[in-house]
Length: 280
Image (cartoon, rainbow, N blue to C red; front, side, top):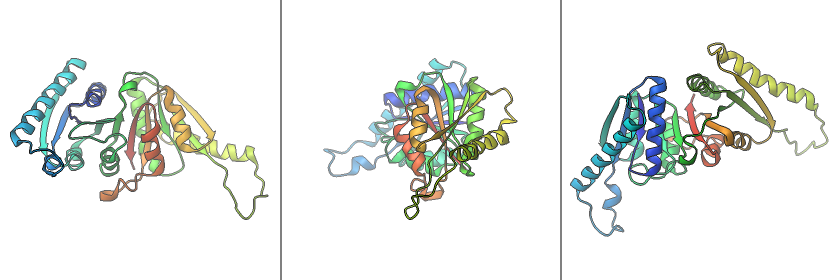
């Protein structure tokens, strides 16, 4: 099942369209979720109380319109809607227990305000166990490569499998990107490096990872890109012509948003295509 957080915003509509396409490709049902969060309206700085019935009727309208968008995009998709009272992060975390994928828009209005760059998306990506895809509206319909960040850690393994699967489903090229920088020795700056040897070692990192998981996807074309650059910079540049950028995360438990990692956070802020954060 694919879960989509909806709040009536234009970016949520884009997320629904993205998720509907993915649901058809993956042959999965689509569940649209809206969080009815009354807490903001109980804070004194707001001019007046919002009636509970008004919030519920608005939520019902948002879900109905989102379902119409999904069915218009993909008439054959199996769509259900769920309205849940509570904080958005908690609602999505609970719903994600039975999800294959969670999809969010890059910015929201109501129940999911703050994604992509706010606390909601970071906390959801750090806490749930399935991939979290955050979609930017201006790049939602663009076709291109599936880009995945690769290093020698176990955190990237799940991301690489997810990226291979997405590339296979989309008929896209998988671009495996690995970035590295020379170590800096404060007390021994005169130490020299064999650059050719270092480049070959870094290339082996990518080749070994791709070989480990690529055997299950013989039809997927793979391009290995190794850069002497900062990882976030390399992935952001690769996102210019990508349809999806996949990164791993080591977020764990209730403090997942804190442990999301500098690369995941940097990519979520700067990538110019949809981003999937995949936990190990």
